[in-house]
Length: 612
Ligand code: G6P
Image: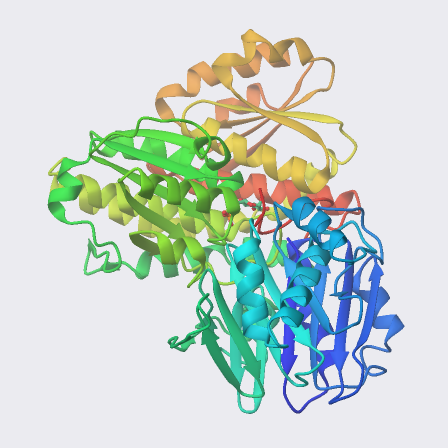
């Protein structure tokens, strides 16, 4: 969602802010703004509705704005419509305090009314302007002391925030405060950066600090001082980001999504190799003891969006390989349900960003209820990675396209490896099968490569789907879970209505929607279930549907029913999801570009959903 960038150093700030914000465009936004300060001079604030290029034109790519200290923001509207007045930065009435903010201030109405009684007035409809004026109020009350002002405001604010503030009396300094919204601080020679996500600063530095919840940071040129809510100085370790800058660029591909689809063989291999050594899985960061794993009788997989679909697939894998029961829960539901969690259970929270608000809240709830937690997370140092008892990092690298592909694939193999290791620790798998399964997992990267070689045929087929208005994805078991992901991919970037159904459920409603030329995409890879799903394909075909199938090499008889068949290489059916999802990613990509849409930045969506 919203993006934040801040810089203080010797170089001109505005071009750095615009460049950093452009790297955060994928998070989703509808207006943008910057505030830049030149030494003691007045701060210049430029903000406008629309894309960053509007801001770039207004400022001659930032060159027209002079100053070496500044903050910038891309806004994804929550309180108040997308407009210049609601865009950030927001200022106090006298311009003393200027700030940008990510998150949601839940008690902003109450605070706004109190501030109005104290003589403040408001120009925008945003919760951010309330935060700025609250900080200004405490700033004046506590002798113009920024840390005091921020800590008092933080005590009054309920909700989530990553705040970057400049105070008129403190040129060259940026003050940051954080609670439940992502924010990192980067440091280089004589330069300091702040950003809501790594890609914004990767070009300038890889040395970062993670600011914790309810903490404050003061940024000066090349130096950062951290404070707790009691205004005491605290020490933080400096961490090095391993991602290289090139991995956050398009690298010759037309879109990030296509690049990320093609990166899958490599990142799956990296993720597997990060834990498999000499034919055995070693989870150094998973500190569950063997006894704890042996005692497990329930796993809850909790996630949102595509990560939830990973959980839908993994439930079949874990339940096949072990005697552990699995429940898959949407984080947004789990957090508000009064679930009775079993004592010997483990909550696995899956999240690319590690910052999804609902997933983070669900993780905290599971911890509060006293059960062990494990995060499968891509972004190092993110909130879920830090707060989970155990972490399994996927090595997908930076994922920029809003529609996830490579992170999803890495989460899936991470889950396979966990399931396999649980089975081994619990003596529920023979050594020979363990090795066989591990070998199968090792073949996934080369098999994904093989599918990618077939993309021209998929592009040809996808062109036929550009003008459809509805699509149905059907499958059983793991194939159903993959259909859910395929359906989400298609709808999120092509804006085509699509639904995934367990094939056996068709007769309980959706079949009434099948008419002449309705597109039905069937995933048919589970040996034991093929005949059942083929019957469903025949049923919809006889009602006029155009049927496509994704199946395993050898199932050529499907061509009798489907008008187009995409074959994936042979693999054990437990791991077929890693292959069958690839054609579905490619189809949704090609349909979206065929329709002329902005495939990397679909309307209304955000990469990282940091508010509820
Ligand atoms: C958004 C993204 C999805 C992602 C979901 C969960 O909706 O567009 O790609 O699956 O959030 O995000 P997370 O970072 O928790 O995996």
